[in-house]
Amino acid sequence: MQNITKKALVATMLISCGIAHADDTHLIVQTRTGNSQFELNTLQSISLNETGIGIKDKNGKIDAFEYENIEKFYFQMLVNMIETNPVTTFHVNIDKTGSMLNIQGVDDFSNINIYNMNGQIVKKMSQWKGNSIDISSLTPGVYIIQVNKQALKFKK
Image (tube, rainbow, N blue to C red):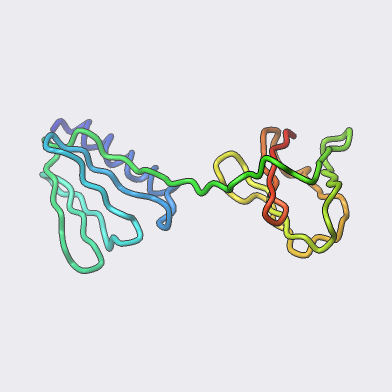
């Protein structure tokens, strides 16, 4: 494998490791003979040497891959999705400034989560008391608001 390709592989690994979350990510090594998949939370280390990559799990088992046989090396992130209910009993609206979210049709002391489109919680409120929710810190885009077990989309 050319030196530039090794450098590209190392750079990809470093960038991917920086954004990958161990609980919801798999490492995939695609070779000429097939794919090998590893759950990140089961790995102890990933090492690089002159000839290839070594992936060691927490039990001490090492899987080795030579650079010349690797076709792809990537992380697969699993996104947790919430189930939406087609019959939603609440409504939301945003004030004219785009900074406050108002909810109607919900009992006080509800639990509220706001998710971005990557499935990450960007705002969480336990025992919400019916007041407007400050969303000024959210970037413009589409979000999902979950109130107890119901959810709907809104656009900021």
